[in-house]
Amino acid sequence: MEKSKEKLFSGYQVFIIVILSILQFTVILDFMVISPLGVILMKTLDITASKFSVVVSAYAFSAGASGLLAAGFADKFDRKKLLMFFYGGFILGTLLCGIATDFTFLLIARIITGIFGGVIGSIGLAIVTDLFKMEVRGRVMGFTQMAFAASQVLGIPIGLVLANYYGWHSCFWMIAGFGSVVGVIMLIYMKPITGHMNLHPDRNAFHHLRTTITKPKYILGFLTMSLLASGGFMLMPFGSAFGTHNLGLTMDELPMLDLVPGVFSIMFGPLSGKLSDKIGKYKTFIFGSIAASIVVVIYTNLGITPFWIACMVSVLLFAGVTARMVSASALMTAIPAPQDRGAYMSINSALMQISGGAASVVAGGIVSSTATGMIEHYDTLGYVVVGTMVVMVVMMFYIHRMVNEPGISMPVASNEMPAEIATETV
Image (cartoon, rainbow, N blue to C red; front, side, top):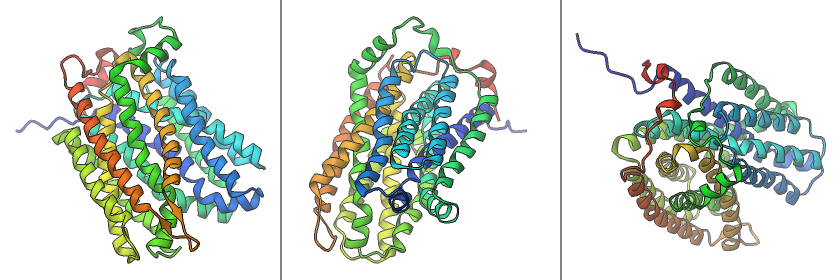
């Protein structure tokens, strides 16, 4: 009788992948759902478009600030306790959004939500790096990227349906309620992750932050991932206006232009992860960059276009972008040493948030709109994005070479995963 094939992940590791993906889903959904509420909030709370933009940006900037502040402490605590603390704060902030009655209250609530929610992703990445070997991290990142796509697909329709039937507060109550259930499950079943604490138990938090942010090999990783975040933030803010005024899409077709590629992205995530583990993270990143670059140039130069063609181009763009995100994220996890993982991920997440905001400002200086609403110089913006992709291919080459040098690529430490978890198979 042939010996049964050993599974890639243990039962507990599957649980961790699922719980981290769901956490990412709730956090990103909270951010995505605010977008379709703009018209309702401006009318209900009697605020201007500029004030609403402040509400949206408050989350990103507070998330970036909290990531930097939390970095020095990220490796001094059990990762489970740290995750529970910040997820609890995120749920509290979401609940406050659900009872907000005016602009000031909502602004404060979004700041609180950003302070806690902005750190959850970095803690999750540190846990992935602690519990999963480099050979399978692409698959893990693929599933977490799938959660991002699912939140994008569901964010707008959930926001609109709940807001129309039950009021805009109900969106946040739904997220907080679901998140509370997830938090309880995590509290009961997730095991402590403390192996990293024994490496430098007495290190000062501020010294830890300073040394982490100034290590040359870490700086390269920070700059590379910051550049990765900039591309999307350049194109996305003007996507709706470009779709309606330049491509000639109707307001009914516009949501479908996000929905259809989002549905495909749910499949692209795991496929990209599997591909990056099979042929290599850097090769997958190159493939995704070439595909995305070609499609960006095509898309940003389109004129009046039938919906099905615009949709097909968007699907191809999402495929390339997903391959880049999954492979880059997986390769990036090999950079920090075990004792620096939490700090590195927190700083990296913060810088990505900040660079994304800066990229939006740069994009606003490149494009302009005519009296009829058409977006001008969007093609120029596309060439700038492609330029960042080319630069990133070079930067990722050096990271790829660095993490494959002897003594640089860090294996999973034996004291970071209980023996029964490491040896258990599904």
